[in-house]
Amino acid sequence: MKNKGKKLTVILLAAVVIGIYYYVTLPAINIHSAGFWQCLLFLIAVFTVSYALAQTRKEVKNSGFAPGQFRIRELFSGSKTVKAGVLLFIAVALVYFVGAVLSSPIVNASKYQQLLTVENSDFSRDIKEVSYKTIPLLDKDSAELLGNRKMGSMVDMVSQFEVSSEYTQINYQDTPVRVAPLVYASPIKWLTNQSKGIPAYIRIDMATQNTECVKLSAGIRYSESEYFNRNIYRHLRFHYPTYIFDDQIFFEIDDEGTPFWVCPVKKFNIGLFGGQTIGQVILCNAITGECEEYDVADVPNWVDKVYSAELLTSLYNYHGTLKHGYFNSILSQKDCLQATNGYNYIALDDDVWVYTGITSVSGDQSNVGFVLMNQRTMETKFYTVEGAIEDSAMSSAEGQVQNLGYRASFPLLLNISGEPTYFMALKDGAGLVKKYAMVNVQKYQWVAIGDTVQECEKSYVRLLTTNGITKSDSAGVFEKARGKIASIAPVVVEGNTHYYICLENSEEIFDVNVADSTLIDIVKFSVGDMISLEYEMASNGICTVVSVE
Image (cartoon, rainbow, N blue to C red; front, side, top):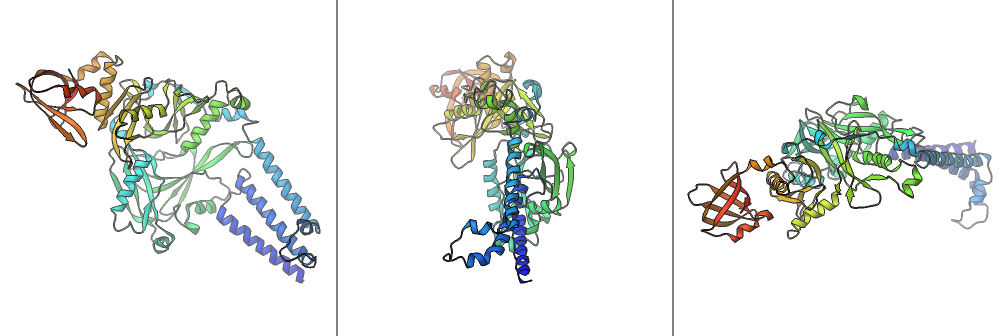
């Protein structure tokens, strides 16, 4: 009876260890989950070692070894149960290993290659010339700066909460925005505030840079910064013990501004662990914790992110590199294509699409085209547009402002006057956007810089016209003036030198921005010189000059 009691105690202690392990690691009870197999191996090991310790405690104690010595042979040599546990551990580990191999691209290259369906499409037809109200002018890093600055101004919350680094880009009421929940500033701050929950989230308009701290009538009670059962991952696991959730869940808001967690559920299409896509989506109300389950095809339209950008690019890489089998992708690499080393987001038809360039695996500095991948439906379109990779375009733009030391953000791809064009922000050392750049995809040495998006576009269109790319009527949008200079005065505006010119017998004031390298010849002119100007009338009544002769 005494030995049975000891064994029962050991088993109970082992069960407690397994329970703690499950509560912390949260593996799905599903044979397709690697975490399940790891948990199973851990369970077998704990019970086997615990039983062996209980069985051999007396023998080890009387073996004559010095305190602290321990030999595996004595521990596992005396019990059939222990031997069975060891054999079971080896068998499960073998199944896990074989399952992983049989699920890999090495033996399933064609299946991996077909996970993603790619449609060839036409750039000028699909990518319309968009309104700048719908273009995200900020990247995630710039959004974080704005969010942290806004949080610093909220004196009633800044000492208790911080802004999460997970800024999700979505379309909200036809506007590109990034949203991020607040998080507790420390465990102590969680302890003093968790009864009411997190009171707000940050919303940043990516086009206007307007930043709001949206306060909620009821606090967010389920989030990544919660502990114990209100932690969003633990909340999901206890509601859906067999579901394998994606590594990344997304914070979004619906059309009324209610915060939700969008939680994709993995679907494995090849063997035990291979061919991951998304099968279902769980929408969890961040305030109430209420969960709703949807098939991917039935997800509400306000949801923008089901597939992460990382998952989509990995699926395309399978599609592009495994056309002729796995070993071809490693050795000869014939016809192998892959995504470039970055991506950005484009809003089209109320969905968010991932944009990335496509290049050969040889590591050259040119793209063969680019893809757009829908984050809600996985729809993927390929566009044949040969040109420079994004890194080359970024370097070209930075070269135009190398004296200022600005760094380019990862570009968007836009349709400007029918030309595929990289558009990017230029930021200073503090991460603040100072200028904008447009770089022609096929001729990446053609770069236009502007203090505003509109100014940048005007300079770029003029550049295309000068090089004979755009149609002749594109140049007719500007007015012309010619006359003798009555006065000319240099003025510094926001760090840039502008020349303000008045002509004789004219009441107009002409603004020449020397930051535009095509206008630098204005410094050669003085009062009394004849000059020809091409300009556009700005909303403030000043004539913005686009060319000087």
